[in-house]
Image 1 (cartoon, rainbow, N blue to C red):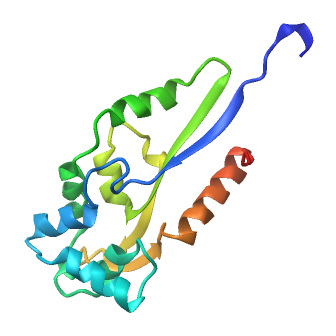
Image 2: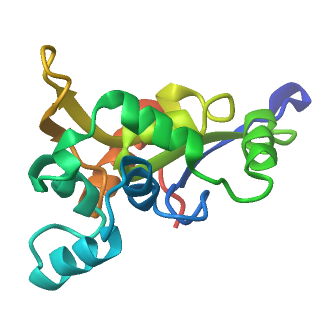
Image 3: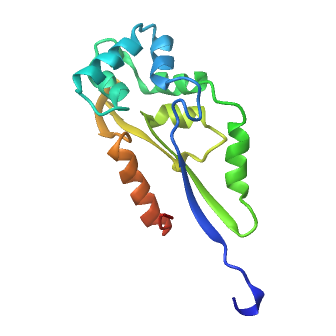
Amino acid sequence: MPNGSTMTKRYLVASDFDQTLSFNDSGRVLGELMGISGFDEKVAGLAKANLVQQGAELAYLLRHDPEFRGVRKEHLITAGKHVRLKNNVHLLAKFFEKGLPDHNFQFYVISASPQEVVQSALEGLVPRDHIFGTQLEFDTSTGEISAIRRVSAGYGKIAVLQELETNLQITPVI
Protein backbone atom coordinates (compact mmCIF):
# COMPACT_ATOMS: atom_id res chain seq x y z
CA MET A 1 0.00 0.00 0.00
CA PRO A 2 1.34 3.42 -0.82
CA ASN A 3 2.16 5.79 2.05
CA GLY A 4 1.77 2.95 4.56
CA SER A 5 -2.05 3.19 4.50
CA THR A 6 -4.13 0.11 5.09
CA MET A 7 -7.36 -0.89 3.50
CA THR A 8 -10.29 -1.67 5.77
CA LYS A 9 -11.76 -5.13 5.13
CA ARG A 10 -15.55 -5.14 5.02
CA TYR A 11 -17.66 -8.11 6.04
CA LEU A 12 -21.36 -8.85 5.82
CA VAL A 13 -22.50 -10.81 8.87
CA ALA A 14 -26.03 -12.20 8.86
CA SER A 15 -27.86 -14.02 11.61
CA ASP A 16 -31.21 -15.73 11.94
CA PHE A 17 -33.42 -14.67 14.84
CA ASP A 18 -35.65 -17.43 16.20
CA GLN A 19 -33.64 -19.84 18.35
CA THR A 20 -30.38 -18.23 17.20
CA LEU A 21 -30.52 -14.85 18.92
CA SER A 22 -33.59 -15.82 20.97
CA PHE A 23 -34.49 -18.83 23.07
CA ASN A 24 -37.94 -19.57 21.64
CA ASP A 25 -39.77 -19.39 18.37
CA SER A 26 -41.49 -16.00 18.16
CA GLY A 27 -44.64 -17.73 16.87
CA ARG A 28 -44.91 -19.63 20.14
CA VAL A 29 -44.50 -16.37 22.08
CA LEU A 30 -47.17 -14.72 19.91
CA GLY A 31 -49.53 -17.66 20.38
CA GLU A 32 -49.12 -17.56 24.16
CA LEU A 33 -49.68 -13.80 24.18
CA MET A 34 -52.88 -14.20 22.13
CA GLY A 35 -54.12 -17.19 24.17
CA ILE A 36 -53.76 -19.52 21.18
CA SER A 37 -52.70 -23.02 22.10
CA GLY A 38 -51.16 -25.69 19.88
CA PHE A 39 -48.68 -23.59 17.92
CA ASP A 40 -46.13 -26.41 17.76
CA GLU A 41 -48.77 -28.89 16.59
CA LYS A 42 -49.99 -26.50 13.89
CA VAL A 43 -46.43 -25.99 12.65
CA ALA A 44 -45.78 -29.75 12.68
CA GLY A 45 -48.94 -30.32 10.65
CA LEU A 46 -47.91 -27.75 8.06
CA ALA A 47 -44.43 -29.28 7.85
CA LYS A 48 -45.83 -32.80 7.47
CA ALA A 49 -48.16 -31.67 4.69
CA ASN A 50 -45.31 -29.79 2.97
CA LEU A 51 -47.82 -26.99 2.53
CA VAL A 52 -45.36 -24.18 3.18
CA GLN A 53 -41.62 -23.74 3.05
CA GLN A 54 -39.90 -24.52 6.34
CA GLY A 55 -39.73 -21.35 8.40
CA ALA A 56 -42.76 -19.76 6.74
CA GLU A 57 -45.31 -21.54 8.94
CA LEU A 58 -46.10 -18.51 11.10
CA ALA A 59 -46.70 -16.34 8.03
CA TYR A 60 -49.11 -18.97 6.71
CA LEU A 61 -50.91 -19.20 10.07
CA LEU A 62 -51.25 -15.42 10.27
CA ARG A 63 -53.10 -15.38 6.96
CA HIS A 64 -55.05 -18.63 7.07
CA ASP A 65 -55.54 -19.95 10.62
CA PRO A 66 -58.79 -18.68 12.18
CA GLU A 67 -57.15 -18.10 15.58
CA PHE A 68 -54.10 -16.29 14.23
CA ARG A 69 -56.20 -14.12 11.87
CA GLY A 70 -56.98 -11.93 14.90
CA VAL A 71 -53.34 -10.86 15.18
CA ARG A 72 -52.72 -7.17 14.52
CA LYS A 73 -49.51 -5.14 14.19
CA GLU A 74 -49.60 -4.10 17.86
CA HIS A 75 -49.71 -7.78 18.88
CA LEU A 76 -46.59 -8.48 16.84
CA ILE A 77 -44.77 -5.56 18.47
CA THR A 78 -45.85 -6.69 21.94
CA ALA A 79 -44.75 -10.27 21.20
CA GLY A 80 -41.31 -8.95 20.25
CA LYS A 81 -41.03 -7.29 23.66
CA HIS A 82 -41.73 -10.70 25.27
CA VAL A 83 -39.16 -12.66 23.24
CA ARG A 84 -36.33 -13.73 25.51
CA LEU A 85 -32.99 -13.00 23.88
CA LYS A 86 -29.96 -15.17 24.44
CA ASN A 87 -27.29 -13.96 26.82
CA ASN A 88 -24.99 -11.22 25.57
CA VAL A 89 -26.81 -10.50 22.30
CA HIS A 90 -26.27 -6.86 23.17
CA LEU A 91 -22.51 -7.46 23.33
CA LEU A 92 -22.55 -9.22 19.96
CA ALA A 93 -24.39 -6.31 18.37
CA LYS A 94 -22.01 -3.81 19.99
CA PHE A 95 -18.98 -5.78 18.77
CA PHE A 96 -20.19 -5.75 15.18
CA GLU A 97 -21.06 -2.06 15.42
CA LYS A 98 -17.63 -1.15 16.78
CA GLY A 99 -15.62 -3.55 14.59
CA LEU A 100 -11.91 -4.21 14.82
CA PRO A 101 -8.95 -2.22 13.53
CA ASP A 102 -9.04 -2.44 9.74
CA HIS A 103 -12.18 -4.66 9.85
CA ASN A 104 -15.71 -3.34 9.36
CA PHE A 105 -18.69 -5.60 10.03
CA GLN A 106 -22.13 -4.98 8.58
CA PHE A 107 -24.46 -6.95 10.89
CA TYR A 108 -27.93 -7.90 9.66
CA VAL A 109 -30.68 -10.14 10.96
CA ILE A 110 -32.66 -12.13 8.40
CA SER A 111 -35.67 -13.98 9.78
CA ALA A 112 -38.86 -15.67 8.70
CA SER A 113 -40.47 -14.13 11.77
CA PRO A 114 -42.58 -11.03 11.10
CA GLN A 115 -40.39 -7.95 10.77
CA GLU A 116 -42.36 -6.13 13.50
CA VAL A 117 -41.58 -8.89 16.01
CA VAL A 118 -37.84 -8.91 15.28
CA GLN A 119 -37.52 -5.12 15.23
CA SER A 120 -39.36 -4.90 18.55
CA ALA A 121 -37.23 -7.62 20.16
CA LEU A 122 -33.94 -6.10 18.96
CA GLU A 123 -34.89 -2.45 19.48
CA GLY A 124 -31.84 -0.44 20.51
CA LEU A 125 -29.50 -3.31 19.61
CA VAL A 126 -29.74 -3.64 15.83
CA PRO A 127 -30.79 -0.76 13.55
CA ARG A 128 -34.29 -1.28 12.12
CA ASP A 129 -32.96 -1.06 8.57
CA HIS A 130 -30.60 -3.97 9.34
CA ILE A 131 -33.52 -6.32 10.09
CA PHE A 132 -35.20 -8.27 7.33
CA GLY A 133 -38.19 -10.29 8.45
CA THR A 134 -41.39 -11.43 6.84
CA GLN A 135 -43.08 -8.30 5.51
CA LEU A 136 -46.81 -8.11 6.05
CA GLU A 137 -49.41 -5.69 4.77
CA PHE A 138 -52.21 -4.53 7.04
CA ASP A 139 -55.73 -3.41 6.15
CA THR A 140 -55.94 0.26 7.16
CA SER A 141 -59.56 0.02 8.31
CA THR A 142 -59.50 -3.27 10.27
CA GLY A 143 -55.82 -3.66 11.14
CA GLU A 144 -56.02 -7.23 9.87
CA ILE A 145 -53.08 -8.75 8.02
CA SER A 146 -54.23 -8.45 4.42
CA ALA A 147 -51.22 -9.82 2.56
CA ILE A 148 -47.75 -11.26 2.86
CA ARG A 149 -45.38 -9.11 0.84
CA ARG A 150 -42.19 -11.11 1.34
CA VAL A 151 -41.14 -14.12 3.38
CA SER A 152 -37.51 -14.33 4.46
CA ALA A 153 -37.47 -18.12 4.82
CA GLY A 154 -35.52 -20.71 2.85
CA TYR A 155 -34.48 -19.24 -0.49
CA GLY A 156 -35.97 -15.92 0.66
CA LYS A 157 -33.02 -15.57 3.04
CA ILE A 158 -30.58 -16.19 0.19
CA ALA A 159 -32.34 -13.53 -1.89
CA VAL A 160 -31.96 -11.00 0.94
CA LEU A 161 -28.27 -11.89 1.31
CA GLN A 162 -27.70 -11.41 -2.42
CA GLU A 163 -29.44 -8.01 -2.32
CA LEU A 164 -27.31 -6.95 0.63
CA GLU A 165 -24.12 -8.10 -1.08
CA THR A 166 -25.05 -6.05 -4.14
CA ASN A 167 -26.12 -2.94 -2.19
CA LEU A 168 -23.09 -3.04 0.12
CA GLN A 169 -20.74 -4.09 -2.68
CA ILE A 170 -19.41 -6.97 -0.58
CA THR A 171 -18.55 -10.22 -2.31
CA PRO A 172 -18.87 -13.61 -0.63
CA VAL A 173 -15.70 -15.16 0.75
CA ILE A 174 -15.30 -18.82 -0.14
